[in-house]
Every structure is written in structure tokens, then in C-alpha cells.
Length: 281
Image (cartoon, rainbow, N blue to C red; front, side):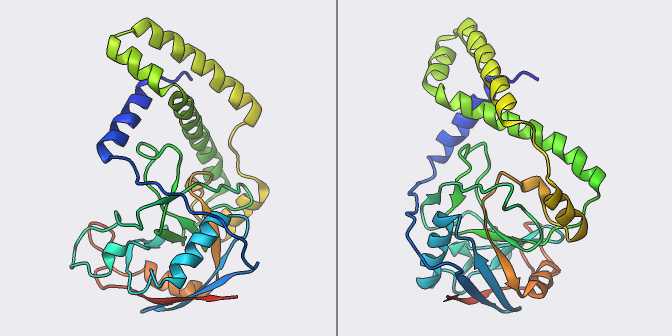
């Protein structure tokens, strides 16, 4: 399948309209291995383990916990058989039925995809982010995170999903190639140089074909298939959102949270709040 340059133009328009992300990348530091976090909530306690091979996310999370950033924040987005999400500072004093999910510390974290080692099986901790349209680099939110509850899939469902994810990843790769030629594309578009845009499109499709040949097609390995068919998860997010930890105790509390009633914005009708977080080494 051949891709067209208008996808980049849509991305750039969206980025300009948002005024950028206020990006300020977190700095990785050396920390002890095996860092755990105790999350006390109004529904019960959850214990998290932070992965050492995603150091930017690990260190940023530790920093925010030690600053008591998460204290009193809500689980502001809950979708049954999918995930529970928290970390928006605007939720601390939010009014009932107020739409949440846009708040943060004012910076983003560079993506750290350790895939397929870390994937979206049930119980993993992942970083929320803005969509590809305004965030083609897939940088993570500086504070918002989600815990996957997910659902079980049949192998046949996973095979069909592989094709969809492979196509989606191809489009993303093409968009990233376009970003490398952003200035030229804008200039040719403004001057009405349709022939120049056509030639560039053909060239980028050739580059995409070579990248696909080098990287291969998207597929779930045996470990992923086993996890998704027995315990469940959210396989459609694999390779797109940074997984940086997992629940080691209290998954029953996460399940309790995911079953609460929600409004049209997926916000719980009765507040479920993080009381505090504590680093346990």
C-alpha cells in the first residue's frame, strides 16, 4: 500500500494548533534495582514494581512520588476490561462531572519501548500520552499512567489484530519519514508544487518499503499469545505506549476500581482517589 503526504500536513496542523507539548525530557539517573511503590487508594492498596530498563520513566515516577505529586489525585478514567488511569493534577480538586485528562507537570518523557519484552499484558503499568496526530514521537505524559486490566483474546483474534497493527505501524513509519522532510513539504505545498510532492511521496514509499523489509512485519510472539489468551490484556497498544512497570500485589483492588460506575467521560461517578504513594526499596 502506498501512503500520501497529506497525513503529515494534518499532523503539523494539529501540532501548531496545540502550541507544542511544552516538552522537557526527564533525565535518567542511577537508582537501586528492584524499586517498588506502594499506592494507597480509597479502594485499597496496590504495589507496583518499576522496570529498570525504562530508566527515564522509572526515575520520573520516583521523583513525583517523593514530591507527593500523586497524593489526592483521582483515577479519572476507568474503562472496564481495558484499564484504569490516574495522574492528572487537575483531578485533585475537580468538580463532579468535570472532564479530566489534560493536566500534567509541563513536560513529556521520551518513549522507551522495550518491546516485545514488555507488552500490554494484564497488570502492567504504562504511560499515557497524546495521540500520534499531535505527538508523532509518541512521547509519554510527564505524570499520567494507566494499569491494564484488559480481556482475554482468542488466537484467531490476535492474528487478525496483527494485520491491523502492522498497517498502523507502517503508517506511523511513513509519517516519521515525512517529518524528516517537513520544511520541504510545507514549502512545496505552499507554492503549489504538486509534481515535487508527487516525487517525494514516491521516494518516501520506496524508503518505507526498505524499512519494512529490514524490520519485518508486526507479530505477537509465543509469550504474548500465551499471556493474552490465558490472562488477557490490551494487545492493540503494543509497541505504541511505554510499559514501565507492573502490579505485584493488589490486582484485586485494580479490578475493584475498574468495575465502578462511570459517566460519559469514563470518569467514576463516585471518586476513587490515590491517598498517597511511597517508595519501597
